[in-house]
Image 1: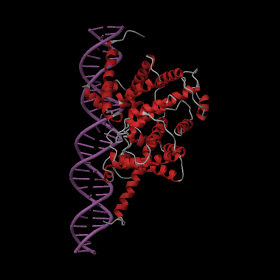
Image 2 (image 1 turned 180 degrees about the vertical axis):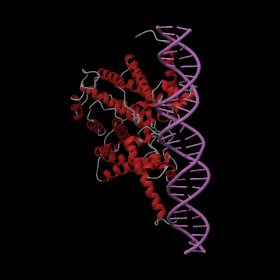
Image 3 (image 1 turned 90 degrees about the horizontal axis):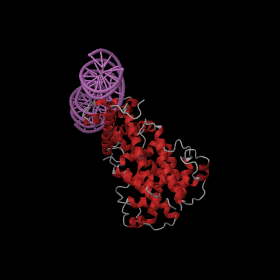
Length: 213
Length: 213
DNA sequence: TCTCTTTCGTTACACCCTATAACTGGCCTC
DNA sequence: GAGGCCAGTTATAGGGTGTAACGAAAGAGA
């Protein structure tokens, strides 16, 4: 019932949850999500194994919380940039900087899905929040876009859009923003360019450029 | 010494190895690679646990073999299509068909890397084989490509190319083929378009189209 | 054919992990 | 101050990888 007043217990609980997540991120940053171990986190935290289950019902539960946080972080980064006047190209570079700052965090969202994992509904909302920013930026950019079968298809399949007033061409551009940049980023983060000795930033810039034409 | 003659023991060994891989693929197809269990495979095969270690030194060893096979399969699919006269667009659709026929196999190669995994040198060769086909197809297509910083950079960073005589513009186009199509494919396979009710084939076709201009 | 050696497969074990159950001790509320 | 709630503990079940030691079968050479 108490909306403002938070009991000391809840405060403590929230703090421990935050500490757990912090150590989880630390672990993920080095080993990736698949090697995330609750027991190891507990050890680092000075408490023993099963105690963690008071805070997260399961490993998947913790991962879900991390995914949620990652989405929130990306949405915030993109949203803040947009609010400070960033255009499409600037947004693209914000996304890349965010991805490179913690590759495993990016891969947690956009990488190979964890076997059992089901996306909770609110991550869809966060995903739409990001999409809404892209749509806003593309509306302002006002880039012409030729007709295509997919464009026509999208005209009748746009119930997912966070902005019903956005032109279909803009939706298409926002989707392409997503797929093209993810294409470069995910290959880069997965290490598929290592050995080629390529400056991926320039390749990325080329793709960003392609999104403005 | 015997180059042609294969001893019965080696025959048997090769066959068991093949059976193990077959069950491994079956398991991966349903649960993904991260849940691959040697013990479960052994059970299915009617032998008990540690026996598998006679055939694969470790779990990573088995996964490496699977990755090798996946690369070989993709290289073969692309190569055969090219030899039958496929152009860029046709090759793109071969790649998509191959990916959709076994999503986890695609993700095994191009998805989030397994924490400890190191790519063996011969997969690089197979990867170059695929690249060589793309380069060949793009040489025939003869598509003009405007200058860019990345193009200039690539001029002096092309030691990785399987075809030293290929124009830099072609290398760039082959790279873009890779990144753009992977962008759509990986998001599709990871389920990021579910809920949008989009016909991804059309979105893919749009991107294929972008590769020809 | 008989023996020696190599290889296969077994069980036993050490050591990781997730997750549950049962129990203890402390804090908060009434 | 008494009782309930909750954090954290150990014990345990059940899964996984991988090693060690042993038995059994199959091939090679005399």
